[in-house]
Length: 321
Image (cartoon, rainbow, N blue to C red; front, side, top):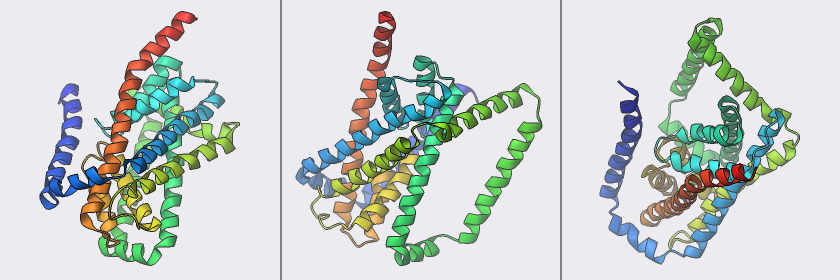
C-alpha cells in the first residue's frame, strides 16, 4: 500500500466510523429533538465557556516556552499560539497528527529540531495526563461507590491488567531490539528517542517550574469550567451536580483524544455519562452537541486564522531583520 493511500485511509476510516456512529445515534434520538435546545440555549453561558476554552489554549502556548528555554530556544509567543491552534484543528482530520505538525511548525519558524520540539510536546502530554489522573482520582473519591460498581459491572480487571502487561512486554522487546541494532533504521530510532528524552526531561531543568505547574493546573481548571458553565445554558440541566459534570467531562475528553476531535462520539459520551445520573435524555444530548459545536467553531476559526497568519507574520518579521 503506497503512502498516499495510507494517508487517505487514515482520514477516511475514522471519519466513516464517526458518520456511521452519528447516524446510529440520530436514529435513536432524532435531530428534531435537539434543535429546540439550540434555539432556547442561553448563549451568554456558551460564550463564557468558549472564553474559558480560549484562555486554556493561550496558557498552553505560553507554558510551552518554559520547556524550550532550558534547551536554549526562546520561541516567539505568537508562533507558539498559532502552532497550538493549528494542532487542534489538524486533529479533526487525523487524530493526534496535530502534535506532529506543531513540532514541524516550531522547527520551520523557530529552528527547534523536530525531535526536541516533539519531545517537549510529549512531556506536556505527560503533565496533562497526570492532571487528568488527578481529576479522575478526585472524582473517584467524590463518587466512589457509584463509579466502582459501574466499572466492575462493565470491565474485567484481569483482562485490563493482562493487556497492560502485554503492551509493556512488547515495548520493552522493541526497545531492546533497537538498542542492539546498528542499521540505519535503528540509528534513526536512537537519535529520535534521544531527542524525545531530552525534550521530556526539559520539564525538570526549567527555571520556572512553579509557573509551569501553575499553567498546567490553570489549563485544566479552564477545561472544567468551560464544560461546567456551558451546562447552565441548557433548559433542563440547571441543577446539574458538579460530580455529574466532572464524569461527563472525563468521558468526553477520552473521545477527543481517540477520534477526530470527538465528532459524533463526544455528544454521545456526554449523554451516556449524564444518563447515569438520571438526567433527562434530550437536554443531555443537546448539551453535548452545543458544547462540542461551540468549542469546535472556536478552534476552526482560530485554527484557520493561524494557518493564514503564520507565514505572513514570519515573512514580515524576517524582512525587518
